[in-house]
Length: 123
Image 1 (cartoon, one colour):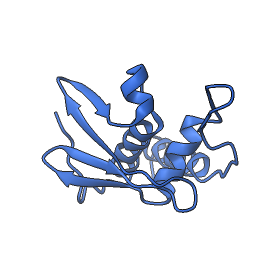
Image 2: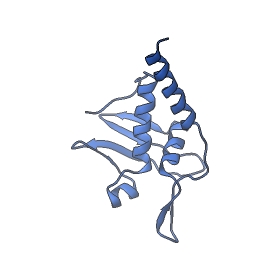
Image 3: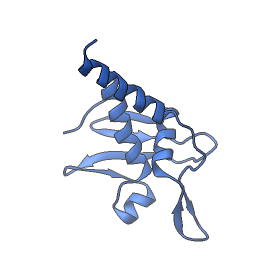
């Protein structure tokens, strides 16, 4: 193994180690303070650990709920070079939500594992 291959393998191992960290600060909307609490990236990692991201065809992905955490299924697609989600957070704020972060993480995981099976990269 040459130095370039070693560095690539180390980067992959570090990513996997960080990805597998389990934290309790999942993102949620606090109705009392009317603010978002917790970490969106932690929630995005949880969606991927629970295999919630699924390709539906025609450039459409869904994010299924995490058991015992939430109950909604959200749709994500690329429109005019921008990814969109039909969740309340994205529709209200037009900024990246935890579902889109989960989708981007899904793409990164698939690319790192060289496994693009059942994945459609939309241009």
